[in-house]
Amino acid sequence: MSEAPFRPREKLLEKQKYFQSIHKHTYLKGPMDKITSVAIPAALAATSIFLIARGIYNMSHGIGKKE
Image (cartoon, rainbow, N blue to C red; front, side):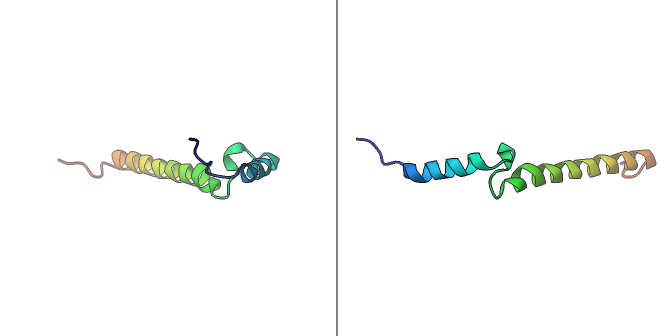
């Protein structure tokens, strides 16, 4: 016995043609892909740069030392 496919083949070919016709990078083709591949890494980078800068500032001024 064979299982029924999740999507009809026609719908799959439609989607395939749509995504192949878009002239963007592969990882930015979906509607929500900008959030996952641009916004989240940018937020992580900004947060880590802020924390590193704050740590360097605290070390250079002797703030937050446990005696």
